[in-house]
Amino acid sequence: MNDWKSTLTEYRDRVCFAGGGNDETVTYGEMVEMMRRLEAKLRDAGVTSRSVVAFPGRYSPESVAMFVTLADMKAVAVPMPDDAKPRINRLMSIAHVTHAVDKNKNVAEVAETFDPRSETTETLGEFRYGGDDSDRHPLYDQLSAEKHAGLVLFTSGTTGDPKAAVQDLDRLRLRYSQPRQVGNMMAFMHIDHIGGVNTSMYVLSHGGTLVVPRARTPEAVAEAIEHYKIEVLPVSPTFLNLLLLSNVSESFELSSLRRITYGSEAMPPSVLARLREAFPNAELLQTYGTTELGILKSKSENNGSLWMKVGGEGYETKVVDGRLWVKAHTAMLGYLNAPSPFDAEGFMDTNDEVDVRGDWMKILGRKSDFINVGGTKVSPVEVESVLLEMPVVSEASVSGQAHPLMGQVVMARLTLSGSMKLGELKQRMREHCKDRLPAEAIPVKITIADGSMVTDRFKRAR
Image 1: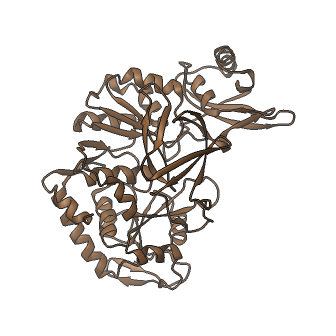
Image 2 (image 1 turned 60 degrees about the horizontal axis):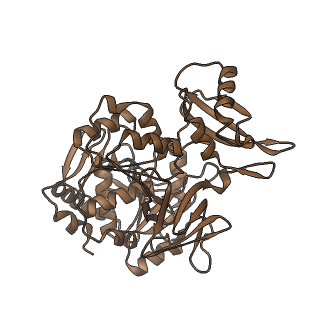
């Protein structure tokens, strides 16, 4: 395949990036010029194909240019999440970062790299470098041996250090080699997330436009859809629920949407039903992917169904003990700070529970999220879906609470669309659930959350 600079040059007169916090418009030609300036600056700072470069993962023209420039230089890109400085330092240490771009001013100013091997840092122009690569990770050496670019993404673990997954960017890019007609696509998940990487590479490979909302809120997203006539909206089920609750379709023209894709977590059936009603002319497509495996090819049975096919050329799937295992040509090389999760045949246990019907499968949720009530497995997604049918409930998060006799009981945290006393809420909830859920799945404990229960990656917080 061509390098990114050559690919982007083919579309020089088209719009590459639009929107964002500064409401910018950047053509492909301008993006190529930005790449040239960046590459010169990086090389002046001593960045080579053996370098590991951290930069802001939040969407901006500079971060997109940095991503593809590092790919062309065959270096390792480490898009960083928005986070507190001590945690950023820890992530850079895990990734063995050699060069870092300051997250506040993007390319204009570069911050000191945290390096546990050295307390001193050598200043190289606007880039600063600490230490050498004498203890370079073997996975990085593997990339160098193949003269491939690398990518480090951090998993969304809630406790302890996140796992750092190393992807082969050249191999990931092969998925986008077939010609496609791509228009304006919402860039919702940032480049520090596999979904954001997928969106960016797909759009840039085919000359489409990455449209970035000024904020990741229902109103800002709807505003961008109307203004830029966005055709494809790739978001999470949790965000789609927020979009539906906000009634933005009454204030904004959203008819340009021809496809809505959803993934990263299980979709509550009640949310899918409301989505289908709100967007009758849009194709609803469930996607499937992980940080470790990349984004798999998928096909939904129909707009109202959660059954889908995943796989295709380059992918193999199997179900063992009710859990989905996947072997993918887009799989990561491994973790920097954890053992390999792949078995001897190259399959990885996704820990997602699934139902199977012939070639179709339905994602039920993470194994660790299921609640064991007296020996019966309860799906939190199923309970959340039923709770979200209640007009007063805007968000629902269901989890297990330890119980001396039952092992666990079902607990629900709710945010409400209006005010209601807890006693009345419990009574209405039991009445609503009694004919929709088995007895063991009806929440025993309910709490009302003070604020939103959405993580920084727009999943339900449990």
